[in-house]
Amino acid sequence: MSENKSRVARRARMGALVVLAVAAAAFGVSSAQAAASENDCFEKAGAYQGVNPLVLRAVAWRESKGDAAAVNRNTNGSIDVGQAQINSIHFPELARQGIPHRALTDPCVNIFVAAWLLKQKMVRYGNTWRAIGAYHSESPGERDAYARSIQAILVSWGQLQPNR
Image (cartoon, rainbow, N blue to C red; front, side, top):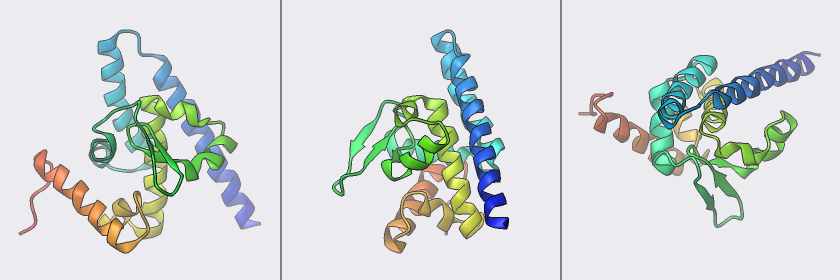
């Protein structure tokens, strides 16, 4: 019974995520407004999921240098889409929630989905570098290297003190 409630709650959160992301994407009129709206998406997605928007920005920078149209094919046959490089392994769940993979090239949709994925890792690992690294990979070596790369980006932006 509690598993069913959890599934219903997850669907409700994803449904709200879809509405917020589509609404955020629909309101950009001029290119300046679109850029401001895109920046607001990091803040809104972070607030909605309870994740740090600076980490979301660093993920988007690390993954694609913020290129909303980025699509990369991986050697294992999967693809990564959008500025936060959402992997195709997530496409079935996103489709069940009403988010087609084509929507992931919309900057706001992509960042809201990235925030949702990062939050899942935070639920599993806590608010830790391990959770941030697991956004990219659960494999310890790749996970830890990715976390260090996000940390280095935040240090280079002056948002984090370097490790000593």
